[in-house]
Amino acid sequence: MLKFIVPLVMFVALGAFLFVGLQRNPAYVPSPLIGKPAPEFSLPSLQDAAYPISTKDLAGQPWVLNVWGTWCGGCREEHDVLLAIAKQNAVPLIGLNWKDDNAAAQAWLRDLGNPYAAVAEDQVGRTAIDWGVYGAPETFLIGPDGIVLYKHIAPMTLEVWATEFLPRIEAARNGQGSKT
Amino acid sequence: MKDLIRALFLALAFAAANVALAIDTERAFDDPALQSRYENINRELRCLVCQNQTIADSNATLAQDLRHEVRGMLAAGKTDDEIRTFMIERYGDFVLYRPRMTAGNFLLWAAPVLLLAFGAFAVVRVVRQRSAESDIDPAGPEAGKS
Image (cartoon, rainbow over all chains, first blue to last red; front, side):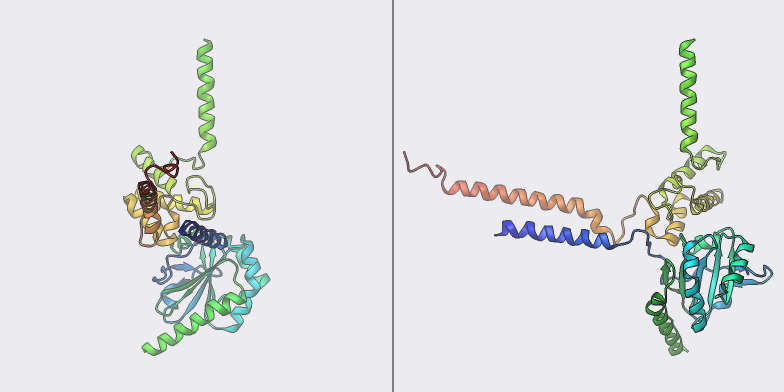
């Protein structure tokens, strides 16, 4: 009897591992930043280089960083979703324009609408490396204490926003309220 | 003369092969020791955009940026470990082509030893069982016939 049960159990276990392995997306690399302090940056604003955008100015509230570029197809795809999210006014939506052409990026925002409270320009890509960005669009949620709470890799959808971002924003706000 | 021409052609062919293989064409350092460290580190870091290539193999902009970063850190006198840590902090363990042993993947590292031990245990058990069976009736089932 054992002769049959042992191989059967092993087969089922191996099958289960392989089955789970098939469902996983190798392009999704979990961020080591989650639960850690967000990397600081101070970058020129896309629209006006004299006006810097700094992580320090955003501290004390939850905020969202969206990495995009005009060269990125997924960014075009998610743009309408970002516009809809911006209308909700839940959190400041900060753009990080990654290795892009300034004029093209400004034209993009003029033509398609600007969902961002501010857009920081990272032309050399150094800030993107600090944030572990490897493929736009990527969207980070940062808590009031400057801790990275969540990262979404792929175009944003209203569903992801409602199920992953909004509850965390709510929790971050409440957590802060109880501390003060 | 013929040999010389043949040798020249061979040298040319190898030179061409080198050019074709090198993605990162410009030399980063004049110091050969630094250059070799630079190349070794690049060969061990994954390009996350083109996941089955190292940053030495790829000309994706991210790979170029990361090579640039490695070069800057080497020039600043950082050790290989410091550079690796820098990459892991940003991109996670997945960035390493030669994975570290961590609490999360310990079972994977131990698996060969564990499986070997399990196999040895199974072999010993089966052999013991079979020899025990033959002990019961040493003459075999045909014993009573003659």
